[in-house]
Length: 176
Picture 1 (cartoon, helix red, strand yellow):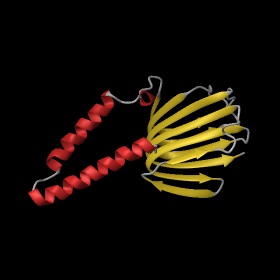
Picture 2 (cartoon, rainbow, N blue to C red):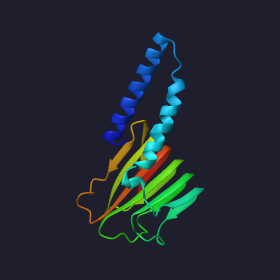
Picture 3 (cartoon, one colour):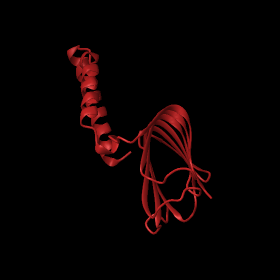
Picture 4 (cartoon, rainbow, N blue to C red):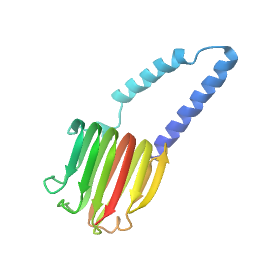
């Protein structure tokens, strides 16, 4: 989760807590205005959403397995789905020099990245629950997101950026 998103979430939680404290003293039901306010915020986000989420060439799936490998054209891409598993084999992909970005937006799923040593890898994952495993080293993150940058990212000619947003994601990074 980016620092800006963490600040927004923190402010929202503080305000929500403050509303419930005040509601105890003035004897009102916060639910009477919380749900309409939530709908207004969500509607505003749909209208004024950032460009990064407004991709017109996103691929939409309900559920399933996606294998990104030798048949994939290495271009910036966004995938949106409810739930599923995604395997990304960077060894099989003919990545061009420079950065290639792959965005995944889903409710829940697993993502496995097979990374050769000559490819720089950056992962930015935002979610309520993010479990990350890197060659056996496991990390769990709740409402904090996960960021990973390979040691060779700055010096690598070929760079792959994986950007995820989900409720729950299980990330596995395997060196090949």
